[in-house]
Length: 99
Image 1 (tube, rainbow, N blue to C red):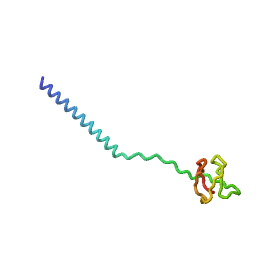
Image 2 (tube, helix red, strand yellow):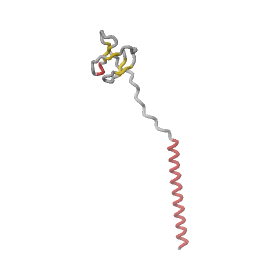
Image 3 (tube, rainbow, N blue to C red):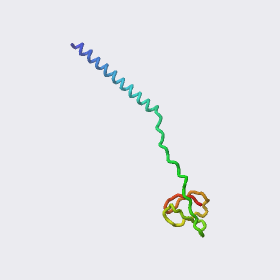
Image 4 (cartoon, helix red, strand yellow):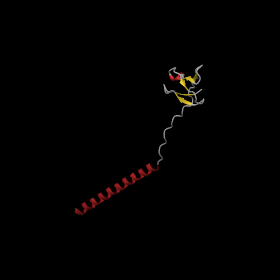
Protein backbone atom coordinates (compact mmCIF):
# COMPACT_ATOMS: atom_id res chain seq x y z
CA UNK A 1 0.00 0.00 0.00
CA UNK A 2 2.86 2.34 0.83
CA UNK A 3 4.62 1.61 -2.47
CA UNK A 4 1.37 2.24 -4.33
CA UNK A 5 0.88 5.59 -2.58
CA UNK A 6 4.46 6.55 -3.43
CA UNK A 7 3.95 5.64 -7.13
CA UNK A 8 0.74 7.67 -7.23
CA UNK A 9 2.47 10.64 -5.61
CA UNK A 10 5.33 10.41 -8.13
CA UNK A 11 2.87 10.14 -11.02
CA UNK A 12 0.97 13.19 -9.72
CA UNK A 13 4.21 15.16 -9.37
CA UNK A 14 5.21 14.19 -12.93
CA UNK A 15 1.77 15.25 -14.25
CA UNK A 16 2.13 18.64 -12.53
CA UNK A 17 5.63 19.14 -13.95
CA UNK A 18 4.35 18.34 -17.45
CA UNK A 19 1.45 20.79 -17.08
CA UNK A 20 3.84 23.49 -15.81
CA UNK A 21 6.18 22.91 -18.76
CA UNK A 22 3.27 23.17 -21.20
CA UNK A 23 2.05 26.38 -19.55
CA UNK A 24 5.57 27.86 -19.67
CA UNK A 25 5.91 26.89 -23.35
CA UNK A 26 2.56 28.56 -24.19
CA UNK A 27 3.60 31.70 -22.29
CA UNK A 28 6.95 31.82 -24.09
CA UNK A 29 5.22 31.40 -27.46
CA UNK A 30 2.81 34.23 -26.60
CA UNK A 31 5.74 36.49 -25.65
CA UNK A 32 7.54 35.70 -28.91
CA UNK A 33 4.44 36.44 -30.97
CA UNK A 34 3.95 39.76 -29.21
CA UNK A 35 7.60 40.70 -29.70
CA UNK A 36 7.42 39.83 -33.42
CA UNK A 37 4.13 41.62 -34.03
CA UNK A 38 4.62 45.02 -35.61
CA UNK A 39 3.46 48.05 -33.70
CA UNK A 40 0.04 49.23 -34.81
CA UNK A 41 0.23 52.17 -37.21
CA UNK A 42 -0.34 55.65 -35.87
CA UNK A 43 -3.81 57.01 -36.58
CA UNK A 44 -3.89 59.22 -39.66
CA UNK A 45 -3.36 62.90 -39.01
CA UNK A 46 -5.80 65.38 -40.46
CA UNK A 47 -4.53 67.11 -43.59
CA UNK A 48 -3.35 70.67 -42.97
CA UNK A 49 -5.86 73.30 -43.94
CA UNK A 50 -4.99 74.89 -47.27
CA UNK A 51 -8.00 77.09 -47.99
CA UNK A 52 -7.52 80.02 -45.63
CA UNK A 53 -9.51 83.20 -46.16
CA UNK A 54 -7.77 86.19 -47.71
CA UNK A 55 -7.79 89.54 -45.94
CA UNK A 56 -9.83 92.29 -47.61
CA UNK A 57 -7.93 95.54 -48.21
CA UNK A 58 -9.50 98.62 -46.64
CA UNK A 59 -9.87 101.33 -49.33
CA UNK A 60 -7.74 104.39 -48.58
CA UNK A 61 -5.74 102.63 -45.84
CA UNK A 62 -2.71 101.02 -47.43
CA UNK A 63 -1.55 97.84 -45.67
CA UNK A 64 -4.73 97.53 -43.59
CA UNK A 65 -7.18 94.67 -44.05
CA UNK A 66 -10.26 93.15 -42.48
CA UNK A 67 -11.09 89.46 -42.21
CA UNK A 68 -14.84 88.82 -42.33
CA UNK A 69 -14.47 85.28 -40.95
CA UNK A 70 -12.74 86.65 -37.83
CA UNK A 71 -16.05 87.85 -36.39
CA UNK A 72 -14.99 91.49 -35.89
CA UNK A 73 -14.36 94.50 -38.13
CA UNK A 74 -11.17 95.83 -36.56
CA UNK A 75 -8.50 96.68 -39.12
CA UNK A 76 -5.39 94.53 -39.13
CA UNK A 77 -2.04 96.02 -40.11
CA UNK A 78 -0.24 93.81 -42.64
CA UNK A 79 2.24 96.42 -43.93
CA UNK A 80 5.56 94.88 -44.88
CA UNK A 81 4.19 91.33 -44.95
CA UNK A 82 4.45 89.72 -48.40
CA UNK A 83 1.27 88.88 -50.29
CA UNK A 84 0.13 85.27 -49.77
CA UNK A 85 1.77 84.97 -46.34
CA UNK A 86 -0.30 83.10 -43.78
CA UNK A 87 -0.83 85.32 -40.72
CA UNK A 88 -2.89 85.17 -37.54
CA UNK A 89 -5.44 87.79 -36.52
CA UNK A 90 -4.21 89.10 -33.14
CA UNK A 91 -7.78 89.65 -31.93
CA UNK A 92 -9.62 86.46 -32.90
CA UNK A 93 -6.73 84.09 -33.63
CA UNK A 94 -8.18 83.40 -37.09
CA UNK A 95 -5.53 82.55 -39.68
CA UNK A 96 -5.72 84.29 -43.06
CA UNK A 97 -3.57 85.14 -46.05
CA UNK A 98 -2.28 88.62 -46.80
CA UNK A 99 -3.87 89.86 -50.06
